[in-house]
Length: 510
Image (cartoon, rainbow, N blue to C red; front, side, top):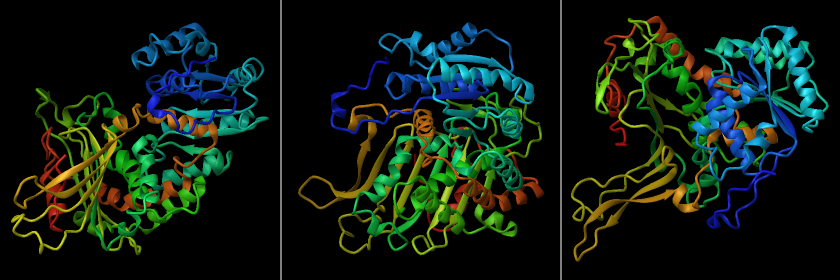
């Protein structure tokens, strides 16, 4: 039996997590980076917390021929590197007994016989009860072949349930996303398909709905009468590292905005769902996407900015320009920074700009949603604070320090009347005395449980591509001027400042 490690006394009285049904987790790309860096540590952590049942199995599928012992040792090494396996952790031997490896070319129908035999082992030896979660941890160009071969080999059907988890990017544009949806839905029902976005598994992202709809003081002011604008920042200090070939064909708009940033926006902007049923939540998110004002190709320069990092000293060492990175074209026009000004044309958000910025080689690693409220009339406290009072800001910090911060004006202690902005700061670690679970733990468990709340629906994916497509087309038709146009360690190009300052606003200092 796995050991229950989550015994922190500060968590006493909190609801116990649900334990999943028996199942086999089939990982295409089982020898790949995603499997070993994220999925295996997440599954092991779930096992150690007692959230996986006794009847579970993990079937890694990879192209390379290797022994079962060799594959298990590679998993063990990954767990040690992720620091989830060590003294005091649950028994590795019990977890390893649930692991099987199948060498198979996912494009070859005849190789699926080995996967079928492994699933039979999972059902008969491990008690997986015919339930299977099929995870496509491979590049998206392989999705269609796997789905077709699953159908040809009969592995899309079972005596229990079958679910398909698909990693991003889900298509590279609107047309490819529609084609991929069509091909997958020829074999699987929409309610069997789980399109994963790891940002939605972060604890603070999940807390957005709770914070908004479980607190009565927020809802009356969560609208265009009181909110001036919203800023969503997804900043990375790293460059493209060894992913130059992938990134050069993708860019920041596809890589971060079409999925992560728009998903965060939808949670901030959606109406209260009828219930916590996954489809009720996703229906409200879909309404947000449909109401986002489309930017015409002729107006892209007014509402969108792109940038590319150059070279310079950053964090004590010389950082290469993007065009000098391995596997990147020396004259690449791919953007590593995007800033957008979007509008949601409905009653709640009419006239409220939503500013999004994301980029690589920026000053700090930070993901934050900041809701800035309108200024208070400068009447009562003009003498106490001669300069303009700072507007209230509710900042939802997604990473690295998950929490929520409210900035408000307060009186400075003393005999006189002076005002100064202060912060009311809530952090998960200090408030609950426990580390928030890694995103893949939550998402894998939800997929096994059949809870699709944090996964993207096919129509929503297509709607998000509709939003960014005019921008993509405009940028593809016009080469950028002045790339590279921002230094490593900055907050992007000057044009990003111009974008927000045109409306009399400024980016938050992070």
